[in-house]
Length: 169
Image (spheres, helix red, strand yellow):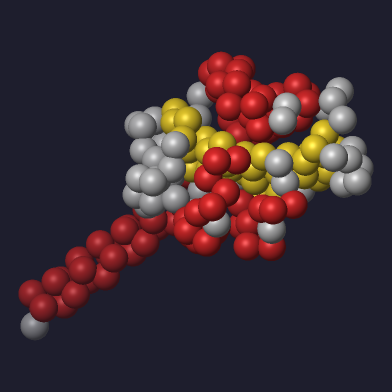
C-alpha cells in the first residue's frame, strides 16, 4: 500500500513539475499583443498593412519600417496578427506579416489568412522568426531569422527591398 502511495505521489509531483514548466515556457516565450496604430490618412492612394506580434525585435522591425515610410504619402496600418481575420487584403497595396514560429507552426491567424488569401501572395512580404531562424511556411516566400534585436536594421533593409516594388507601382 505504501508503495502505491509513493507511486501516486511521484506521478502527481511529476505532473505538477511539467505543468509549471509549461507555464514558465509560455510566459517566457509567448508573444505579446502588438499595439495597433495608424500613420497618415486612409484616404491616401498607397496603403501598407503591417501585421505583427509584440516583442522587442518585432517592435524594432516595425518601428524601422514605419520610420522609413512615414515621410512618404503612404497610409500605414499596424495591427496584431490575431486581427488578420478582420482585414480585406484588397484594401492594401502591400502586406507585411511579422510572426514567430510557435509550436512548430505559424500562429493560426497567420495560417488561416494566407490560406484564405492565396491570390495576394504577390503583394505579401512575410518575416518569420524562430529559435533556429530558418523555419517558415512551406508555400510562402519569407524572410527568416532569429529574433536578435541587433539584427533588426538588416532585416528592415531586406523588408524594404521587398516592399519598394509593391509601393512604387
